[in-house]
Length: 328
Image 1 (cartoon, rainbow, N blue to C red):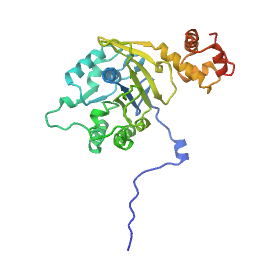
Image 2: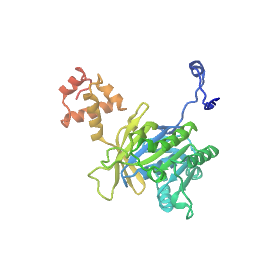
Image 3: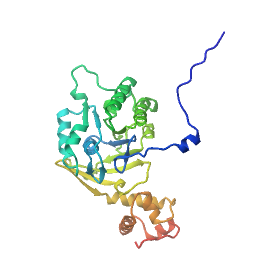
Image 4: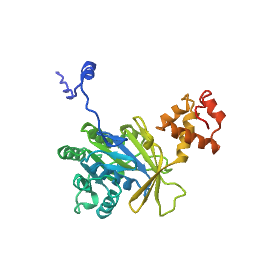
């Protein structure tokens, strides 16, 4: 009996020689310094902490250019926001208010470049997107290619993946991660919002979620914050490229749609001391460089850590093989 062979997939490959001779297009920043064209970022936080407000600042920043929270975008880009739960009137109010706080924003460009597709804006009986289903993935992928969308903001994983039964199951979340890989292939940057786990220490669900993202940032509400305050610390849990000081943990507070951003000294001290005590680095500045700290900031933070009794001069010497580079 004759056997038939399954045709191979039309997957192409290239030799090392071909790759080494190829001219690669540089990836421009969409949100400088942490999000480039075709990259994906995960923003996680507990309910009501502020992840949606942050994303609705990033959307206009990408769509109209300007500067916000020390981050910047040098030219307007087309942005698609897909929202799975918020009332459209509330979403619009936030967009209008938050856009006013972006320095140098081209508001007319931002208004033209942002499109919002919201579950709450659909006619009764219309099924909204399920981004774990290939049919919906293909529809969005086709649309963003046709319209030249450069940034896709998804709010949030839970409300946009109805068919995922268990967010803790690696196999269950794979279809959604496949969609993010499609966006990478198409050169579309993606910002995905997600809920914190029960302890509030990281994102909810399978650790497999982290594999696709170049950037993961967590927002955590301080225990001392008043109930009426919109305040959180923002820390980069994952970042694949070289860090700078705008990627250090900072405190964000929102009042009347205006952000106030300050350095989070306590977190900076803890992270610098941890880097020194790891014994994996040989100089104080090496520890500072690993966190994106300048020489002046490394010295300042370390002096404060010593003054507060978090670490002693002798412990610094022991961990860094005798190095006490700065006066502390």
